Length: 259
Ligand code: NAD
Image (cartoon, rainbow, N blue to C red; front, side, top):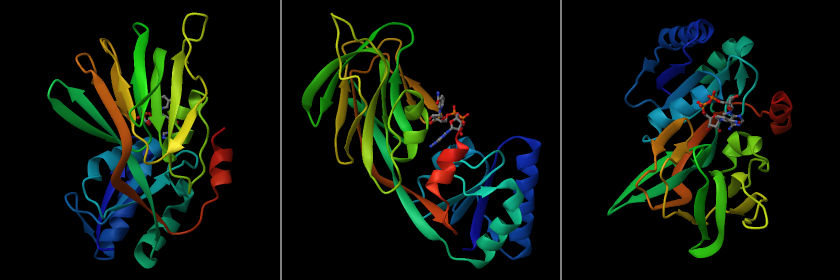
């Protein structure tokens, strides 16, 4: 690959490592290209990787590779003392590309539809009042949920927010959408399914409410108000994120590094 871009976390250590990679690439006659890179290198954590994906996801062929400056993450394949190995791989090896679909949320507001995309998850949350949501799976009413909200994640996001709210971890190679409750109310008056629901990737999940006042929609690290919205449909996007794998990294090792 010829055209690179480096996205670093703000801290000094990440900036120094980013600069080291940049200098090495330039000295080997590679270009630093912010507009049309072929490869984006992230230096920081999974959050830095997510920021880079949102910045460059409009370029369908771009590939991402991550160096972690803390402990090994889910989107990062190199630790900080492996920066020389990463530079060597970038300059001399051809990666295997692993692609993961983004999740797409279509927000209906009067006559307009806004489309949002996420790598980890899309979630609706209302921390101010009980949020009532009619949940349709492929246009069939499944339940009326009441509680703080609902989270829809894909395989990549299963270890992120989804895991904190009791969702299942999905190993790579299984392409799904997972619907998980956020503080659901379960009592004599109100019931919803409660368990995380794992669905085929081509499922449409539609969330409808007469009143989303005070609710937010969060997609990865981004957030929007849902105040005047009536309907949010969540599907698997046709768009993919391409991750460059120069060497295998054990998923079990990543899981072990989580805690
Ligand atoms: P951030 O970048 O500070 O990340 C928060 C934590 O989530 C970090 O420890 C990060 O390493 C981890 N993380 C992110 N993606 C992950 C993944 N796919 N698998 C395992 N861990 C992952 O936070 P931010 O920029 O506000 O939000 C980015 C992401 O952080 C969100 O998409 C959400 O999934 C996650 N998050 C998790 C919680 C939680 O678990 N309670 C709370 C807020 C955000």
